[in-house]
Image (cartoon, rainbow, N blue to C red; front, side, top):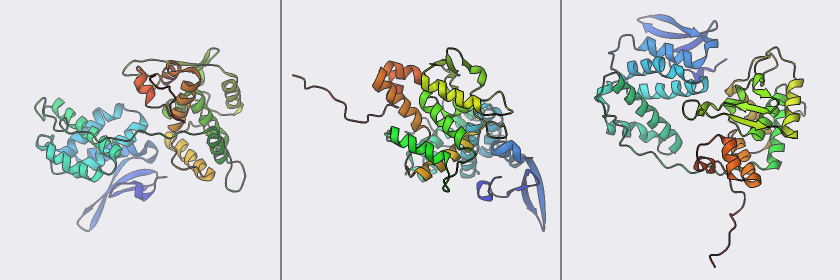
Length: 341
């Protein structure tokens, strides 16, 4: 159940559905948006459709609603949730604009609020650029007039966090056992997810969509979601004794869902938010700060690079260039070399 603070203004949850409430004199008009089980992305799309009914076709709120329907709906559920939140903020900031009226200074003014958060600044810049591209596609702007193209992205510091082997063990203990020292219901499965992330070096989204049919006699086959629209490369992670033991533990879980590997006790597959919430609870119990789930991928590629070289790390990461792999590799100690002469 979503908290009220998670919802936009005038949206409430009632009787298992999202509702929009609008004042009409002394009365309140309740409009059903969608079922609560459909999630926030569906709610935001329905809300955008509702609010854009009386708007001009090229108004920014209407444009955003159309983009969510035509483009955003093709994205993964995790990306749709991010899209919905970002476009909501942009829609409020450009509520009075038509698509043809947006200029670079307007975008600069909007992005000022995010100058102390470079990654957030760049994410909103990217979304605005995509919306203006869509406006060109719809004929609301002349081709080549995207006002965001001339704006620079902010420099972001490279993430250098490396999870040590000791920290990884402590994180697993924190996930498996609550403050009372008893094993948590979700602990064993989330620990397996953490172990799989480290042993395979794959992203959380690809692990959570992992199916039993992808596990074969030669290893585990992954089709990274980020490569589907580009290289389409697949990764086959060959068996090691540790990986075999992990899969044996996973097979020991009894679930009604025989399709997906990582499931809750009721047999439903884990969502990204559910898995990350369990991960964060484990970190808190272990007392380990400044650590993200994606740091497991960095640890995996770093360890592979140290043991088998950058080429193997590149293969595991499904990267088309070594430069991409180098962004993940964390140097635990200074790089050693000899003097020129």
